[in-house]
Length: 220
Image 1 (tube, rainbow, N blue to C red):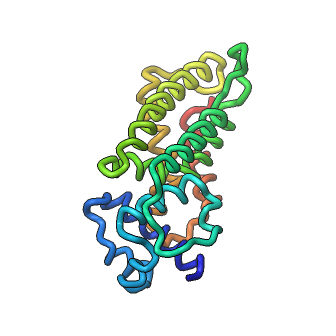
Image 2: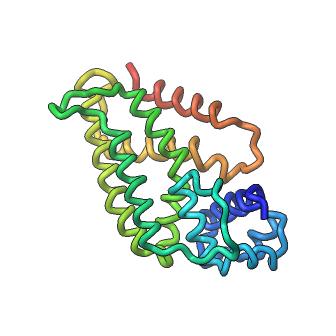
């Protein structure tokens, strides 16, 4: 079984689990869009839960799809998924930190925005799938949601610091601006590909558009 077929199943399944959730997603739908027979899909995975856990693992470990797999692929152990999730969350914390040990700004606003966009491109879909499919990923969801709250609070703090430093225009209610920024990053980094899977817009073009929106909205 070639990895290209497995990659296509992964891409289609990730989108279905995001848009329709685990309960409403049918293996037959994934098989049809992936251009494989339903029987072939069940020869690749032991069941729908195994396919969901596979998409989560490969979303968290971006090199995983290049590995060889013994089929049918079973459900991935939760402890394994938790370990990879923690590594991703730790990476995000390090990547988005804007102050040094003395509390001084070490990363300008647009650099921070670009880093967040890149993180969303890499990880938003899998993190969103963990949240949206919490009924079968309860432990992962609890871990992620606690860190998600931290991220929103930190981004509000960053906006206050950038405004005080004159890097962005003065703002009030930073928590509302956080919602706007998150929605903008989410749309241009991830949701556009879910809504328009056949678009010819490149990821580089989408990033440039998003950054231009953010720059016009916030930079003096």
